Image 1: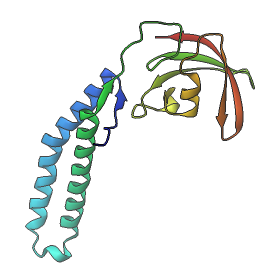
Image 2 (image 1 turned 180 degrees about the horizontal axis):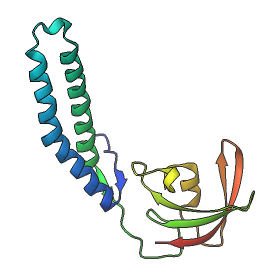
Image 3 (image 1 turned 135 degrees about the horizontal axis):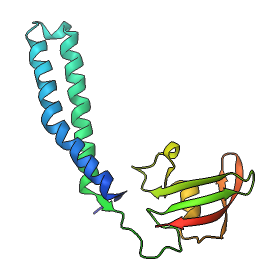
Image 4 (image 1 turned 180 degrees about the vertical axis):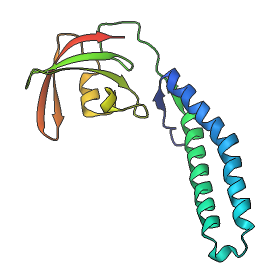
Length: 158
């Protein structure tokens, strides 16, 4: 039997996904059902663009519902680490670039919560993998498209 993929999520993200699923299965599904019903009333379905559009929306909706169900069934909640001295999932890490001296703070999250613009990087990304397991004061090297980048870990918050 194939091993199920586990999706690393925070408790907050899990709750957000549950709310989205509930909304899609109740409110949005009824809205699309009404659109299809209304479009059918226009007559010939073979040349009915409103009907085609509503059916496309219904397909997208069912696809998203299936995706959310899969995520929720295979979710692995990120627990707060007991130790504060190493980088783990959920850690907030302040790093200093040894190339240009810039200081940035990132939170290490699962891939479904990653948003680099908001400072949330995946543990599966090269930078996230490079940080995992290291301590404050460590220097890491990350292979990036621009070449090898060096960072010093200044602070870790769990």
